[in-house]
Length: 92
Image 1 (tube, one colour):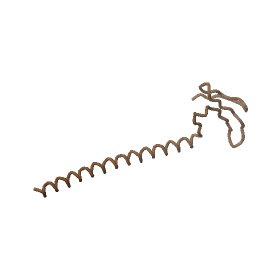
Image 2: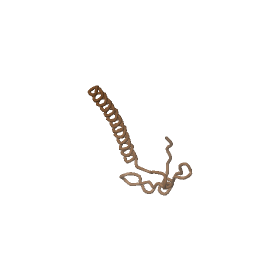
Image 3: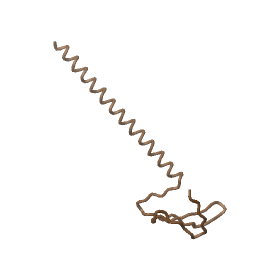
Image 4: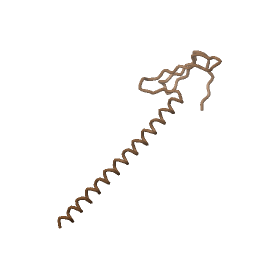
């Protein structure tokens, strides 16, 4: 981790396109401003982690849903084959 000392209105540049500025220093904490390209997402860590967890849950749910649908399709196919075999046997 890079640790840099900055004063109010001083900034750092990241990757040539992101600027982080110290906006204020109070008893409650440090206020920072972030300038970044629109296509780049900028989140507080707790928001980022909540989004990541929601994405993980959605992936798990969609994977489980896909697996359930596949299993149901296979069971229906087996049931149809079983019915066809039973009808064929009854016809003999």
